[in-house]
Image (cartoon, rainbow, N blue to C red; front, top):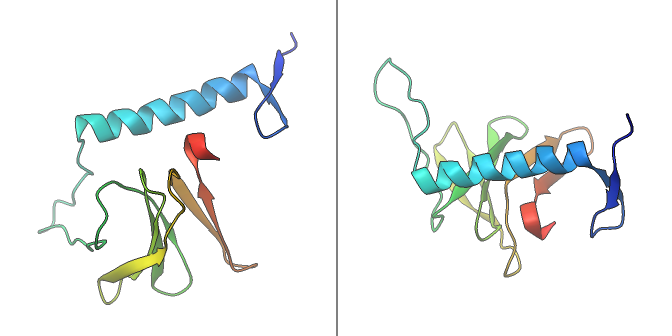
Length: 121
């Protein structure tokens, strides 16, 4: 059986399976935000937290080189950079209005940070 193909707004083909997978991922993320689910905590002592100053809807994290990490803010698309050793973070990229940041991935070999923009591309 051949999947039906529909072109997505960015110009490439998108199969029914790809559309369903994308929708499922977005719904899971939305439910997590709406229901306010807390992340699992370790049983050995208090959880350590690194505050992203000014962030209200943190979503997605990626490990950079060394002790650097990157985190995205779901509803603004802003990206934060921090250091897990020092426990500090600050805004790294201020996204244009109307953007989202759902997930991040670091390509260490090419020094690139990829950000999934959800409905905003």
